[in-house]
Length: 197
Image 1 (spheres, rainbow, N blue to C red):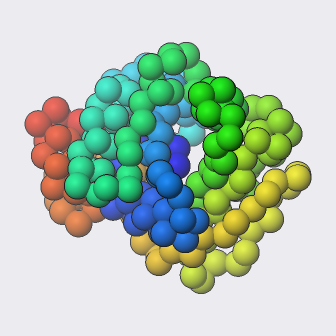
Image 2: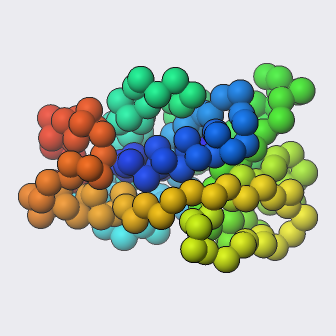
């Protein structure tokens, strides 16, 4: 399960655990995007605004928060390979490197409904469709999803959990509490490092 995770919140954790349980995965990697190409365009460290084309917090901060959020939750493994690789983050490149490491590995890419709908616009989408199965997160009250193209799809039911990273950032900017939105460790990290203020 990849993402910008700016910051990771409890909805991300519920989604990852739902996917792990229903797909019966050996591992659930929480892959932090280094330089997410769909969100780049503004200098890092600027105030966070709208999701597309907005500045993104430094990758080191985002990975540290993911590590804190996954602490003590055994199936969830923080992964920083996209950060270490450097440059714009493309899922195709990440999956290719994972397959080079272990050609027998079956990779399921866990995505939310909005990402599933946009799969056709992804970098090297047709090739990626041949390499992975999509684990499509679907809230219980949502309609089934059908991405355009030849994608193999497995739906993952999850409870409705209406939290977004944007909402967490806005609450911090307004001085509102974020208890229940993020783990205690993540809340402390945001406060200690003055993120989103």
